[in-house]
Structure formats: C-alpha cells, structure tokens
Length: 314
Length: 237
Image 1 (cartoon, chains in turn red, brown):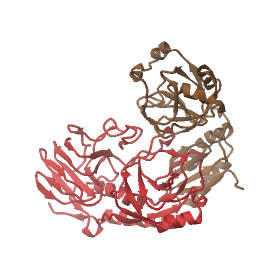
Image 2 (spheres, chains in turn green, brown):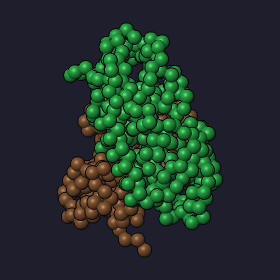
Image 3 (cartoon, helix red, strand yellow):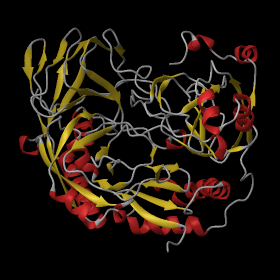
Image 4 (cartoon, helix red, strand yellow):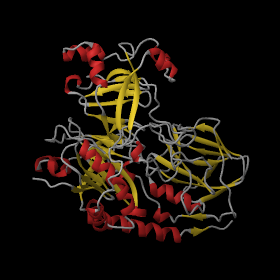
C-alpha cells in the first residue's frame, strides 16, 4: 500500500479510460497523455495498462508501505526517493518506509506514476478513471487527498529494471502544430473562416483543463446559429458564437450543440494536453488517410520501443 | 439536397450518422432501434456509441479496422431490418412538486406566456415527452418537445447552483437535473426520483427512446418519496 502524504494540485487515479458508457452521459476520462501512461505501465511490467496516477502540476508525495517497483514518466519534474534524485522513464525499486516526492514540472503539465501490479481500485462503470466533473472513478470520484490509502495489486514475480532509451524520451514543447481532420460541420465554415483558422496562431487561455482547451486568437466566423446537439469525438474543435475555438479533450461533455470544424488527431490532443496557458498553437489540415497513417506509424514505433527497452543491472 | 441517413467523418476513429434532418418521435424510434444492430454488426470493433436527437456517433477501434470498413459496417447496420419490438420505449412517470418555491421561474414563465402559474403547470404535465438524448452530465435526459406556449429561452445569467431534481425548461426541451450543478434552464419544480444512481441497476429510470409523463405531487408527497426539502432552505436564488 502507498499512503498519500501530500496530494499535490490535482493527482488522479486513472486507467485507460471509460468506454461504452456514453449512453448514460459518462465521458471517456483516462490519461490525457496515453503514451506516457502506457510507457509508465510497461516499464514496471504491466503489459495491460493498470490503474496509475496522473499528476497535474506536481507536488505529490507518497509514503511507501511495501516494497514495490515504480516508474515515473511524462512531463519532467524533480523526482526524489528519500531525498535522493531519481531518473524518469525507468523502473525504480522502492522499499517499504521510503518517501516518494514529485516536485513541480519543469516542462509540460502531466506526469504519470505507475506501480507494478497497478493500484488496486474498484472500478466504477468498468473503469477506475477519475472524472471530477462527474464525481466518478478513483476513490469516491475525487482527486487524491492527504491520508488516502492506495492498495497495490498483487504481483506474480519481481519485475526487472528497465529504462526507455534517452533518444526515445519525448519533449514537451509549448508551441505546437496540431493536425486537424476535417469533420462534422467543416463544410459549413466558409473558405474565409477556414483560411483564418489555419493561418492564425492561437494561444492556450486560462480556461484549459481535462474537459477542453479554450484558445484565444483570430475569431472564426460560422454561419450556423443553431443546430441539434450531437455526440462529440475526442479532439473535436468546437466554435461558439464568439469564434474562439475550444479543443475538447478526455473529460468533454458527451453531447453538445456548437458547430465543429473537425477533430484534432489524438496524438496531438495528448501534446496539447501537456501545454500550459500561453502556449502557441497552430493547426494544419490532414486527410483521414494521413491521420490513420500517422496513428499506425506511432503504434508501430511504440511497439518497437516496448520490445527494445534497455535492461538495467541491479 | 442531403440524403438521409447521411454518414460523415467525426474524427480519426469516429463516424456520425444523421438519421434525419430534424428530431422527432419517429427519428427517436429509429435511433433506438439502430443501437442494438450497431452493437451486433460492429461487435468487438465498437468502442462507444453516443445517440442524440437526430444522430448517432460511433467510435470504432481504428487500429483494427479502417474507416472504409467502419463505413461499410455502418451501412450494413443501416440496411438491416430493425427489430420493431418495443420501439416506443417504456412509459415512465416522474412525480413533480410544482410550486413557486420549488420552481422559482414558474411566475416568469407564466407572465411571458400570458398564462396563470397553474396553467403553466397543467400544460407541462398534459403531454408525454420523448427521451431524445442523454448527456451533458450523467443521467441528464433531454426531453421534448415542450408545448410552444411554455417554451422559454435559457436564463441570461445561469444559476451557480441548480438543486438536484430540479425540473426545468429550455426552449422546447425539458429535463430533470440529476445532481446539483450550475445551469441556465428555467426551473418549474422538483422531482424526488433519482435520475442517476451509480450504485444501483439500472442506473437511470429512463433511456433514449422512452416516454416520460410528469405528474404533480404535493410537498408532503415529495417528502414521502424521498425528496430533500433542505435544498430549498434560503430559497433557490
């Protein structure tokens, strides 16, 4: 078991996400940065991603009550165990009684902490992912609090120490080009509106969270004034009457009635979700075929990475 | 001129099918009938389905099938004869404690419509509504269509705290707030029936395609049915 001694700003228990429950109005949730989440799991030998912690804005401290194998991935931050600095993107043995401390991120926004065997949390609606807006998942639907107890799942054999090669560690730029797949009401936006959208640089506003990122920049006019609410895909770019685009992320509302230009490629949603207010975002149009190519390439690259993790000597 | 059903891309792993241009009881029936067919035809490639007024969003596993296959499966589902049993959905009665205390926008609605408060209440419960969509928040069911006489736009300034169980009107839609939340709909009463319970099956008293009728109850009946009057302490601002 791990015990939370300092919860940090927003530390959430999460598995891969909650799917198949949209009909009840339950959103997908899950890790904003699935690559970092999946790597954290693989580094500790969890081949199927288990319940992990997503730590936004750092500040988490955990007391370890049992020997365990952990890994920390995602946005870089100072990681110490009993005051000793430790690397990210590799598995680390921790002894019962030690203290894990995550500082503030030096780049990016969200860091993942996985443990071999996963945190043993009872799923709600098929998933342990915490969605604060719904009050569902994790421990009674809330973010971690000081004193929370996090049981660790059972482990068949002691895991090996592994690390991701330094060349494979992603960076977390605060400037990015997001690929947009034309979808939904794309055709209803005029050529001028689209030209404005694709030629402008948008800034991430202060209203940016797991639900969606509201951007600031050149206003995108839309001729649609009212439409029936419809299901919303991950990355959908919604344009309300003020013309300021909102990119909808993991905790988005399941249905909504604003016109949408299309949907951002999931790989870029993950990078956007690592951006802070003030980050500069541009958009580039890609076809659905190009999007699938990029996804397949990413998937193949990740599989190769997982089979080529470096083994470390004890 | 668009032809329905109309299939469009919604994202890298999502298709949306517009069953008709507008919503309505027939469209709701067709969507309700389509859902089990979609699950059967897509099988393990289906990740999630989000039905709404006149559309269904289908999320598929794009590492297993590409969009050509997903399109073909969707067309196959649309062409399959739909099971016609129980399409009208079940009829659910929801009790409502209508009063100016529990429904602080009743008098404004009445004034706007040139009706008495009692007439607004009578009109709201005179008809059957369809569940057109569930979303926004867990258990939030969009019901339509409200009689045009008592339809009203959302409040200019949404309330920060709408009580759990609040029965509300926005345009020609009506709904019951499943939990305390911010909201801009016009409040006409309180319903003691829980609209979302994560700890019991089924989690909701209604699903898409069902019919709903509101039935007026007294304050005492509201309390007997488990309603919480403490939410009204200090009034709903």
